[in-house]
Length: 128
Image (tube, rainbow, N blue to C red; front, side, top):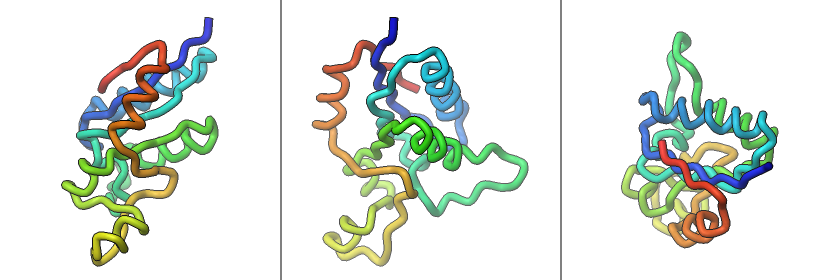
């Protein structure tokens, strides 16, 4: 039986929780489940296109981007949490008169309303 999941990432890109969330997402998809959304709330560093990964570390940003592209999984960065942590897309950067934008490709800004709607329609909500 295929289930619909929403994943919430509260862990920083350098923490095990973020990588565990990615691995869990891969396993869900491998087993034929659906992921209607990965919502980055406190784990905003996962969505920052300016994060520089050293060569001997896992490039989790790239892994999330590949997962989204291959499986059409929406990667949503909470807009209010993102702005508090200095992450913005091009449109918001212009509106807020910021110097530049740095939301990584493959991610979109979204609000808690989108998250609540996706969660209400999901069979399971899992937090990392």
